[in-house]
Image 1 (cartoon, one colour):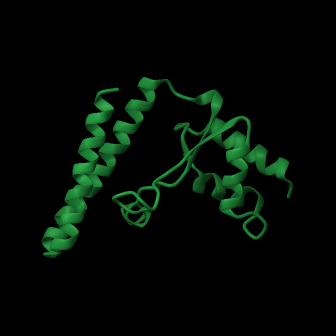
Image 2 (cartoon, one colour; image 1 turned 120 degrees about the horizontal axis):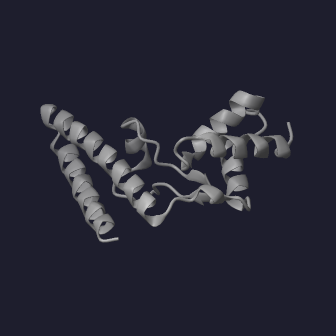
Length: 147
């Protein structure tokens, strides 16, 4: 396995995906699937490689300081980690706004389901956390609307 082969897999995959902004974890899985490199290449090493690649932009994901943790998103089935996009596929500002609004709506829908579940379980602490996350999502939505 060579870095050139990994690069080729990544670039071809990023070119072919319908959504140009692809979670790095999915790019990594594609590399593992194509080349069985799991024992030689970590996801972190691939992320570092993509960050330094001249044709790729990495959009960082949710960090430890976010009101909703990465693990919470993972449990909700949302991949919120870093994403990669080819510079040649960078969407316009309007396309980015639409994409973020769509992702925000998916997040809100999942948070609403989690809120319903937390209320059913009478988990007041979780209800408060989810309500705060929904307020933050609304705030983000308002800021997106102003762009």
